[in-house]
Length: 200
Image 1 (cartoon, rainbow, N blue to C red):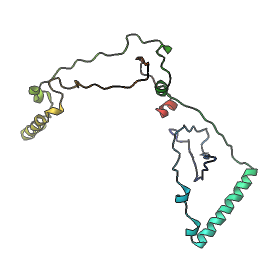
Image 2: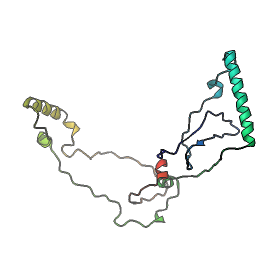
Image 3: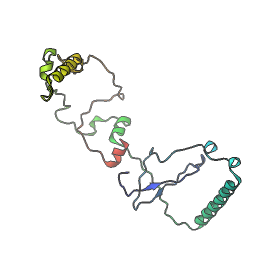
Image 4: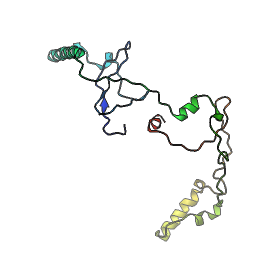
């Protein structure tokens, strides 16, 4: 959570498949929102994770029994006199991206933007292989020997540069699967709320 005062957590808990419920303690002064899918801890199989009574030393076994008896007594006492406030709430938080991907496509739901998608490209001057060393800015602080060695490295790796108009022209076709009946929609960038940013 981005709020440093929002402190919450949970203790080791046995969760039953017939009643999968997890108690989360909120130690802050304000409600805490836990979104669906948020990780709160690690889950282990109690049959393999917990210690078996037969593997415990007698004194350790007695301590465990005494502790279990104390817990039973506290649970029974607190069940009769509740001392904490229990609040349960759920909310489905979705982002516009989720709704666009999963919901029905309705291009007429909003007014189309004037001018349509921005498809203009910025023109770049092509650099030929012969101009490579003159176009690369090499520090004047280098010695003549260092400069010569660096120029050899640059020339040897000329393929790393977009020379002779090669950059940005890849002759490949990619199929992008869209929802059936989907029409292109041009939308300006828009800010997302903090809740939606967590989902995104």
